[in-house]
Image 1 (cartoon, helix red, strand yellow):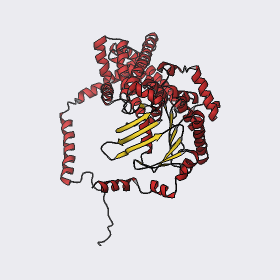
Image 2 (cartoon, each protein chain N blue to C red):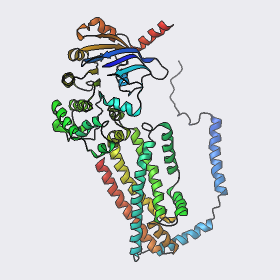
Image 3 (cartoon, chains in turn orange, green):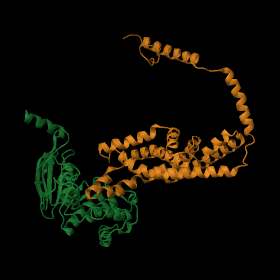
Image 4 (cartoon, rainbow over the protein chains, first blue to last red):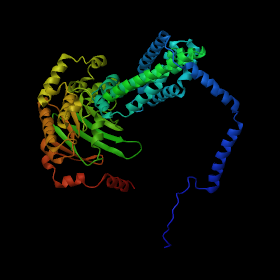
Length: 264
Length: 258
C-alpha cells in the first residue's frame, strides 16, 4: 500500500487534455473573430446616446392629454385578451385530450402533439405578422394570434395534467359500462378542473401582456396606439402609454396570483 | 352463473399469468380467491369485466359470452358486472350522490349525466342503498371528506347501483384497518344474501376469507390449486398455496419444459 495522499484535485470537465485545450482555444478564437468582424460603428453608438437623450427629453413629462385614445386602445387590448383567452382555452380542451398519451390512441396523440408544437414554435409577433397579412390590420388579427399563443401553452400544460390523473377513477367508470364522454365528464374533468381554472386565469394575464406586443406589428389594441405615438414622435404620449401598460400588468398579475393561490 | 373455461392471459411475450383456468360460480354464493401476490388473482377478476383482455378461453355470464364483445355490447355487459376496488376509485371532487350515480352511467344518456338529471327511481334506489350501508347523510358531502370505511361503502353502493348480476371485489379491504375491514366483509356477505347476488372477492386475509365466504379458491402462479369449503382449508393446503415464490414456480416450469 502506497502512502496516503495529502492532495486532491477535481477531475477536469473534459478528460482528454488535447480536446480540452482545443475546445478552450476554439471558443476564444470564435469570440475574437466575432468581435473583429461584427460591424460595430463606435461613432454611431455615440450618436445614439444623443438621440436617446432627445427621446427621453421629449418624453418628460409624460402627456395624458389624449387619454381618450389611450383608454380606447386599452379597452381594445382587454377585449382582444378576453376573446383570445376564451377561444384559446375552449380549443385547448379537446386538443389537450388528443395530446394526452393515457387517453388518446397513438395516431390522435401524434396529431395533438403536432398541433401544440406548431402553436408553440413561433413567437406571437411572428404569428401576428402572418395574421395581419391574412386578415388585415386590426384587433381581429390580434385575437387570432393570441388564440394560437394560448393553445400552445394551455393545451400543453393541460395535456400534462391529464397524463397525471388517477386512472383508477376512469377504470371504475369503464367497469360500470359508461360511454366515453360520460367517463370523461365524471372521471377526468373533476381531476383537471382546478388546473384548468388556474391556467385560464394565468393565460388571460399573459394574453393582456402579449396583446400590447402584437399591437406593435398592427394587430390592434394598445400596442397599435403605442406604435403610432412613436411614429409621430409623440414621445410624451408614448411614455404615458408605457406607464399605463406597466401599471395594468402589475395589477392584473397581482389579481391573477391571488386567485390562483386561493383555488390552489 | 359465471362459467370460465380454459382462460389464458399472457402479457406481451412472457409467461402466462393465467394458465388454462377453469372456474364456475353458481347461484348466490360468496367466493373468495386467495393466493400470494403475483398469483394472478387481480388479472382473473379484471378479465371477467374486460379491464384486462384475456388472451384465450371463454368467460360466460348467464349465457352471454363476454370475451368477444366490443363497443356497445361490451358496455351493456359491463353494466351487469359490479366491481369494488382496493383503492376505492371514487371521484374525490364529486359528491357522494354523484359517485353513487356514476354506477348508472351505462344506463343514462351523457347529456343527463352532465346535467345531473338522474331518473327518479335511480335517486330513490341510491337513497335506499345508502341508507342500508349507513351513508345516506353524506349524500351532499364530497367523497374525499369521508373515512376509508365510508369511502368503500360508497364504492359498494356505486357497484350495486348497476343492478349487477355478479359483484367482483378486488381486495376491497386491503386499504382498511382490521375492524373496518371486517365490517366491509360482513356487509358484502349480507348484501349478497339480501340481493341474491354472487360475489367474487380477492383477498389476502385468510381468516376473513374463512369467516365471511362460502367457498375458497386458492391460486398459485396462474392456476387454481384449491377449491373447496372454508373448513377444508387446512395447514397443508395453506402451505401449498403460499409456499414458494413466483420465481421458483417459473423455474419449476422451465425444468418441466426442458
